[in-house]
Length: 310
Image 1 (tube, one colour):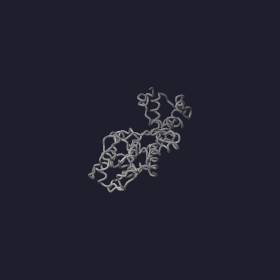
Image 2 (cartoon, helix red, strand yellow):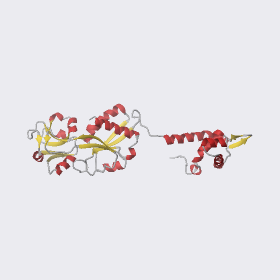
Image 3 (cartoon, one colour):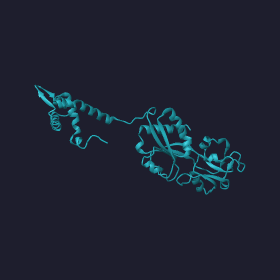
Image 4 (cartoon, helix red, strand yellow):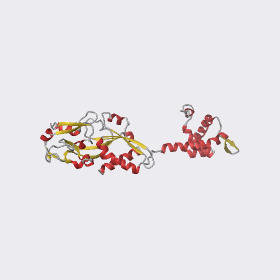
């Protein structure tokens, strides 16, 4: 790709001479040019000498009692003005984002549970407010922290309680809280309204196995309490768990919000439990380099607003 040879032209130039050059070309008077720039007359005379050597042209020549521009000086008037205008724009430029007209694709790392409960409503909002914005959702895995550290993804949404995620050092914001509830098929006669420790160990259990081999947070808690459910079926999809319950004697611990969003919610029965399980706090993480990006800030605020209204 061709371009300006800055290694030659600009290396020989002193950009500090731009302001004196512009003042000299505009005022055609050394003293008045010095006053306009805010330097002394000797310093402006020295700058004029350097400019003459740089352009190999006198630039200003005396005609009677006044100075007139040489043809080179005349030719420099507009380019110098344009250069100064460009530099001023460079130093005041700030990134902008208008969701109504701009295009952007965001990559969000999230579980299928978060995708259903939180990101699906986000798509409705994008359809109304930001037709040029697309969201690429990828699952959480063992490399998620590395991808975020390298700024290869825009957002990671996952429970802050998960151990060894490597996310704590990144900017983050809590989105919403959810709790684990035991659920069974509404016609299940093998269990009452309350699930105790014995029932958890005895009844056939649907276990969610996250991608990457780590145990689900609910299973981490059960193990810490010395409870080992009898696994009858395991799945990589957390949102699939409620749909696997109807017509079976199985039970599962599922997020309360997920049950409410499930298409089989009317076929499920939510139980009470004597086991104390800590809730999860779904948390949004991002890389510091994106913290002030207007488009990224817009996305974070929309996600946070949706989460607050769940």
